[in-house]
Image 1 (cartoon, rainbow, N blue to C red):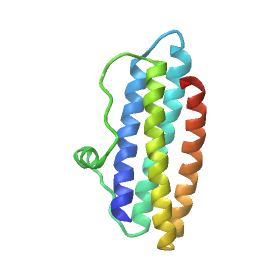
Image 2 (image 1 turned 45 degrees about the vertical axis):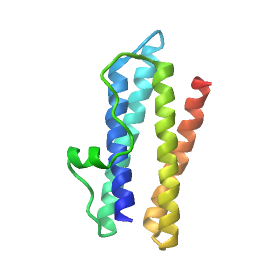
Image 3 (image 1 turned 30 degrees about the vertical axis):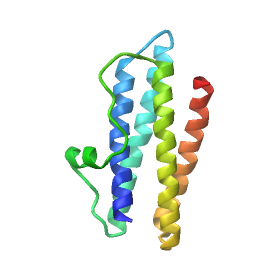
Length: 142
């Protein structure tokens, strides 16, 4: 469970910085709206980072804590420092969120199989949040 959660934590950390990068580099007529939405998304991911790390500690694990370890364990890739239009940003965010949703489902299944109700309940929240965000983002990427 510790490895699954640490990989998830690493992906969240990279996603946080990726969203922040997109927030800084978004361009286009919808800049103000997208800039604000990306800030909302990275703030939510930041809260998830803290929750996941604390829950790893609660179940007796040790969360990753260095950028080097996060990058070595993350499957989500960093964004380049380049200006992008919102449609391109949201396509990438949607793919990342779909990956994170799938990871949440895998962790929930493993938690349920080991009767780890703390982690299972935590994943329920992420399953709901990522599902909602994917649906919302899909409204602008179709």
